[in-house]
Structures are given as structure tokens and as C-alpha cells.
Length: 474
Image (tube, rainbow, N blue to C red):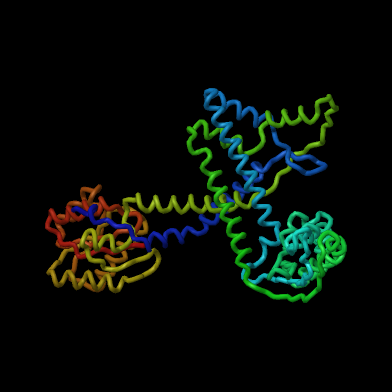
């Protein structure tokens, strides 16, 4: 009987079998949790300085690892790696500076769609002068603006603005918050952009005070009159800032891409050394630095060190999942590789044998329907002598087989019903099978084997015994 070609895995039944073992799954998951936590605790060990709490790097181990990698390479290959490392460090430094600027600059943090802006305007007049001996007028407006621009961008003024803003604002980010420019050939504008109106006012107050203080010097250099017009505040879209921000982000991405491709042309062994070198400072570099910084012999102070450990939630979760996974995998493999029947459909679909009913140990189950199915089936097929068999000698199966036989005898006295051992191993049972008109199969899920059932059915077919159906024992 070619049942193997039609075997299928019932996923729902597999899930039921997994859920039945939930206690085992939880137990192994907890064991995995404990083991994972222990492994994480052991692996987290690191040497730190007692006073500062900083991790102590084992430079000897680092140097040893680097030297072992260098031994695999030629001098030329090592030089190529060192050049790549230098290039990486150069781009990495540029990247770090660029990232620091983007994260620290007030201008880079502004929302370009809503930029708080405050402008103070001054009118400059009488800035033409007559040049002799040729009678002509000289326009000094650009020189006048340059004087005020230089004065307001002086380091001392920038320091005052930074102090006014407070919050530890670095001076190198202050200058980009304001500009001094000329409008309509006679209007001097001081434009300030900041995070809010209050900051704009603080910056502009410092700048206008410095401008007022600079007027006498400026008028001595270039004759002119300067008159304050107005100050206004607005919140506007600033395309200039938007463009600058996008340019900085693009530059950051480009540097990142360049760093990722620096070592692409290296061989596998070169890449191993390259990765080791860019992961941290080497012992050799540290020694050179120390020699340059401390040419004279100095006393080495030994700092107190200790080993600290901590629990790592990552290892704990991995252990938990691994423990549960192992049990589930074992259940799945056992289910798939097992050659025993899993569901009643295995019998009805693979062997084309009708199911008389389902029985459980200690319960009547579907005994009434089973009895009726056997009796009516025997009457219809005009069978007089029935034989109940099973491929296994399980006590539960034997008890249920006797229960079914007794029930059929009580309800259908005209039928001769017997039960015996497996016809595959007992010659006497095989002889009784050959003498019978019909056979009742009793098989147990996850115990009775496909191959044995196939052989049992083959014997019944060979002796011309009709199979009335199968009682499935759960």
C-alpha cells in the first residue's frame, strides 16, 4: 500500500503537540535564562581603575593581536593597510568635527521653515566728500559699512554675545547668528537669527550698544551721519539656512560613505589588520606619544584596579529564547521523524479505512457509535464472524478492544466476535484472521506505526477479509 507518497504534516496538530508540552518549554526557557545570564555576567568582566572608574585597556593583548596579523602580510601589504588606516582616521576626524558642528551649532538646529529673526536698521547719510584738486564726489558708503562690520565681528564683541546668550554657547558658533549688511545704498541692517525672540533681543542689544560705541571712531575715519530707524521681529522661512543645513548633512553622508569604502581594495588578511587598527589606538602609537610627551624619565604611578561585572539583559533574553527554541525544535523533529500515526485522518486518508469512532482510556467515548457501525456494517455485508485486532500490545488498546468486542456481542448476538494479539507477530491470531469474514482494527495515535498498519491491511486483503473500519484510541 503506497501510503508514503501521500503523507502530510498537520500543522494544527503539531501546534497542539507543542502546546501540550508548555511546562517543558517554560522549564527549559528558565534554564536558558539562567545560563544566558551567567554567561553574560562572566563575559562582562572588565578591569577598571578604582578612582576614576575608567576601563583599563590591555595594550599588551592589543599589540600581540596586531603583530600576529602583521606576520601574515608582506611589508608592502602592511604599508598599504597603514595608508588606508591613516586615510580612514583623517576622514573620521573630519566626520567627527562635522557632526559636532551640526549638533552644537545653534544655526544648524534652527527650523528653517520658522526662523526667529530680528533686524535693526540705521540710515547713513552725508557720506559723500569732495576730492581736490579735481572737483568730484567720493562715495565712502562701502568703507563705512566695512568699519562697522569689523567692529561688530571683533572677538571681544563675540565673547559678549556668547555671555549674553549663556547656556555655555561656544563663541565659534555665535558669529553665524548675525550679519551686518548694506541695503538700498544707505541703510545699514544688523540681522540676528536665534532660537527665539528673547535670544534675538539679547544678541541685538549687545550689537547695537557696540555700534553706538563705534560711531565716533567711524565718523572720524569717514565723515557721515548715522540715524537709528527701527527694529522689527518676524518668524520667516529662511532658504539660506535650509541650504546650509542640507549641505552639512550631505557632507556628513559623503564622509560616511568614503570611510566605508576606504578598505574595499584590501585583501581578507589586510582587512583583518585594518579592522583591528581602526577599532582603537595601538600600543605602538601610545608608546610613541608617551616618548614625545615625556622625554625625561618619570616615576610611574600604579593605579588601583579592580574587576567589575554586570548582568547583560541581551544574553539573558538570548538564553531564554534559546531554551524555548531547543524544546520546540525537539518536539517538531520528533513529530516529523516519527513513523507513527498522528491523527485519525492519517488512517482514513492514507489507508482509505473508515473511522468507526474515537475512544479514550477509562472513558466510553463513542462506544455506542462504534458498536452500531460494526453491527450495521456486518449486517449489510452479510458478515458473521468478526475479529478485532491491533498492531500493538498496549494495555490500554487491549482493554478498549475487549470493551468494543463485549459491546458488539451484547447488541448483536447473531455475530461471532473475537479479539486477539497482533497478526504480525502471533501465528494463532493470523490463523483466526484468515478464518474470519470481517476485521475491526484498533489503533492508537502516536503509537501505532504506518508500516505495521499497511502490513495488517495487506494480510486482510490477501485472505479476503473485509475491513469494517478502525477504532482510534487517543
